[in-house]
Image 1 (cartoon, rainbow, N blue to C red):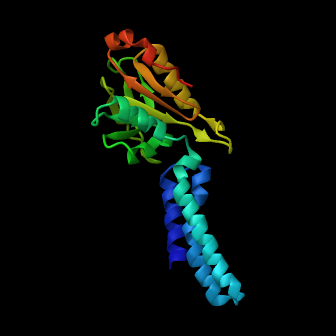
Image 2: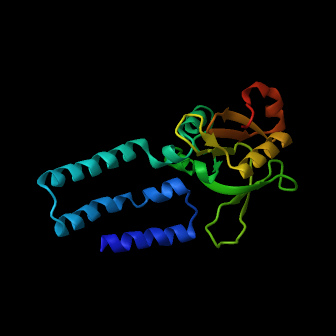
Image 3: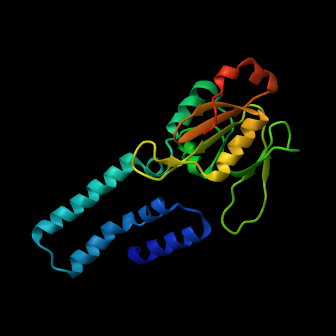
Amino acid sequence: MVLVCYPAAMVALQSINAFDSLSSGRFFLPLLAPLYFVLAGTIRLPRIAHYALPGVFVVLGLSIMVRGISAATYGDVTHLYASLNADAPPDARVFVSQQASSLAAYWDGPVVMVEAYRGDGAGEYGAFKRATQKGDNREDWLTVKSGDYLGVAATRIGRTPTDFVFDAAWVQMLDQIAAEGSALFRYSGEDSVLAEFVPQANRAAAPSEGVSPP
C-alpha cells in the first residue's frame, strides 16, 4: 500500500507545486525501507544482506537528515537568520524567494514567499507578489513597509562552496531595488542576500551598513 500510495501522492504534489530537480528525486527516498521489506519477503537474500541493507538505509537517512535537503539544494539561510537576529525586531516581516523559504523554520516573525517585485507606483518601497501554486493565476500584491526585509537564496549547481547561481529574475529584482535605493543590503554572500527596507533618512545616515547585491 505504501509503495503505491506514496509515489502517487508525490506525483500529485509535483503537478501542483514547483520543485527543483535535485530535491524531487529525494522525495522518493522514504520508499527504500518498504521496498526492502517487500524484496526480503519475496526474494531469498543471504543472511548478511538482511543486516547490511537496513544498516545502509539507516546511515543514508541519518546523513540526509543531518545535512538537510534545503542546505544541499539552496544557499544557507542561517546567514540570513544570524543577520536578522542581530538587527531586526522579533516581529519583523520577511519576504523570501522560494529558494530561501526554509528561513521560516528559523525566524519566528511572519515569513512570506514571493515571486515578483514592482517599484513604480507601488508606494515608497514597492510591492511584492505573493507566490502561488501552479495554475493559480491570482495576483496578491503586498505593499512593502519600512522595516520589512527581503531574503533571497541561490541554487546549488555543484559541490564546491561557490557553486551557486541566483535565479535571473531575482538578480534583476535585486538590481532594481538597489537602483531605486529603497533598501540597505545587510548581508550579501555567495549563496544568499538579505536586504532591509528603510526610510530615506536612515539610508543616508548609515550608508556603510549596506552591501551590494550579487
